[in-house]
Length: 154
Image (tube, rainbow, N blue to C red; front, side, top):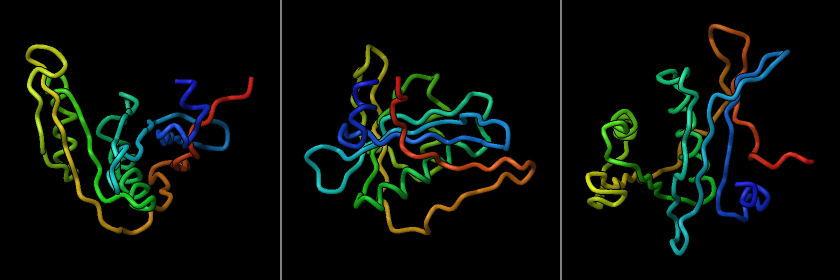
C-alpha cells in the first residue's frame, strides 16, 4: 500500500478520504480509491469504497460514490466499473450499487472460490453539476473530501 501511495496518481490509484471536521478534531468517515482502467479509452474502475461501520446508511457512501463519478468525468471517464463478491454478506453492497444506478453487466461463476461469483457492475457517466461542499445540518461539522491521500513524512 505504501508503494502505491508514494507513487500518487502515477500508481493508477486515485485515493480520497472523507472527513468530518470541527474546530478541535477530525474524524475519517470513509475513503474511496479508483482509477483509469488500463488499455481503455475512457473507462475507470472503482477499486475500494469503505465507510466507517457506524456511519452506514448515513449518506457517506453515496457522497463518496458521487464524488468518484464526478471526478471520473472530470478526468475524461465515461464509464465506471465496480466488481464485488456474490456472497450473502455483500447483499447490502450489491443493493447499494443497484440503488445508485449501477447495472449488473457480468458474472464470473466461482471466481473467488466455489459458490462465490464475481459480479461486475457498470454505469455510463454524463457531465453533471460540480460537487460542492456540504455542511452537516445538525452540527457545525463541515464534511469535505480531503485531497488525495499521500504518505506521511517520517
